[in-house]
Image (cartoon, rainbow, N blue to C red; front, side):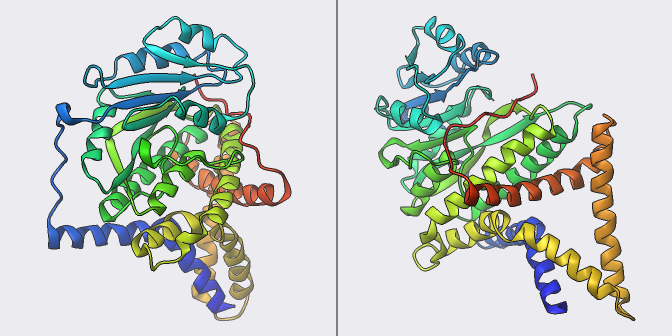
Length: 391
């Protein structure tokens, strides 16, 4: 039991902190040996042609802001196309978009899910690069330039932008926890990209070479992740561009964030089963190492090891002379008590941010277990009820 406890704790630590620490030191060594890679020049004359694709479903609350944001984006004249697709929207989202002749609007009354809409939109894309972004996220003015400059490197097949979560000083657990999580994720992605490749892109803002785009299965839950990883599977890199960022508000509350996380977890298991080739380290050793360390452990065994390590710790701490194990158990109990206190404070709308981190951590890991159960007990659908966001 002691051996199992140690192994469990090592895997848990490695998943959430150890991999980041290891990456940090690998990058430090790489920079010392090879030096820093110079930044890619912004040669505006040689930027590829680009299409910005926005899939919107009943986004009347956000779509006017999104249109204004998109029209203000900087890119060489004549090289950028805007394409909005609104399949299934039953509010006035299509009507608002139709007022703008600069935007190509695709609409049909049937709703088949976001990925079906994206596949349909791609039939109309004839540019060198395509950038995907959500209807409720807003890009910085130079985002497209910062992204598309990377395609001057023939080894780059996709580019992941940065996701930023907007929250104020009175943020609740969903906002503060999500914001902290994405700051840490952004650091990992930056180091992943510098080592070799980002492990999947987020749908808020990512780009692919049009020639490398592959349609994914109609029931794909994490379409952004799968589209980008299929390109990485071909031997191309996914690079991270933190100077291109998409800002969105946090989930309306923890319940909405939990709904989103459970869906992501179910999609994570689906993706792992469909990307089995990445477990073979011989074709792409670094990518396999990054994929398993950054994604697979989080989406599979680690949440269960948290429970197992706590149970084993309780059993072993009851034995006489187990002072070290008792201290370890006390630390675990304290962490979970802080999480429970965070839950209570959230229910009473008392904002103590330090308590939101352990609470959000527990919510995330519960979501993974619930997502795995959902995947193996229900039929997956690309059509889902989106989480409500703060206005």
